[in-house]
Image (cartoon, rainbow, N blue to C red; front, side, top):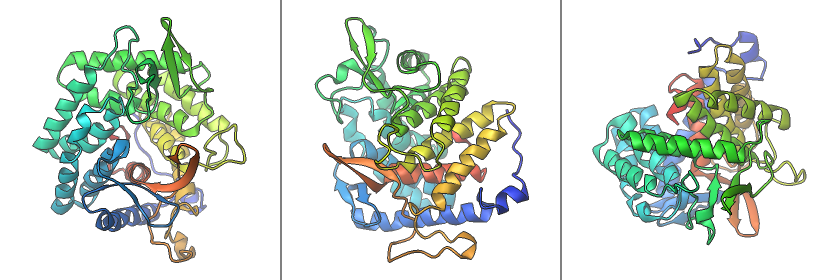
Length: 382
């Protein structure tokens, strides 16, 4: 395990990295922002809000995003120590239970973040029960011919969903199934990870975001390494596999992180490398940073990866995609936008349109990364 060291004063004062006070300020803005969002969504789930509009599109069921809204409150309670925050998280958790029957591997996103974190951090009995039930249900979707859990038909999977595999939920699948006491669930997770790494990875660190199974084998559905968030999802999942099982996943994680750095020289990366005039997706950088932070813990000489993650998070916090941050007292909030909005998430708001939005998952991951950089939590907790 890497022994953590502090960055030099020169690095912290150069504007490249954030000092601890700046990180705490950014985290506080995100924590406060959650209260504002909560007051506007009542008993619905906030899906997204366009740019800095503070105008939320709500959902009664939460789709795949609902678990992140619960996770925001589990994490806020971990940060604040507030019993009230924990009660909010627990209430949101129980509202996720109807998603148990959804035919989608993305249930992992819902129940790892929305339920299992409540058990892991607070030993919440109802959260534990919901997480345990979800593990059994999700593991039962394993397809022995495909050697994986397929995407499923709901939440956008479509009619071919049972022939598809996707990188998006690899990290929470690994963590959720290994949260079980049943070793058979651990084996399902490991087989799924092995299949996905073999099918979607191309050896140089780039990953296809998914593949389709036909005639006994998989074929990738999109180019490797082009979609930034897909590459970041793969990095996060591989890092979780590396933390649990070591090789070959540690080398896979390292290669995927190296590919990220050489293919995305800008700290606020494009959503797609094949669309240079298209939208950015800073949220992909946050997810990638959490993978790098895990890699830093696993390598004896991994401090460079912590520094790389820190640079990417600092670029986001200081950018226009995050409102209200006062850098050294000189950066004044522009316009009338509320503080603490992270609107750097490229999101498909309908079948033909992508927009930059504020989202529960984007804010959760940014809070998580800041907590890790402040040494409040370990990176593999997410």
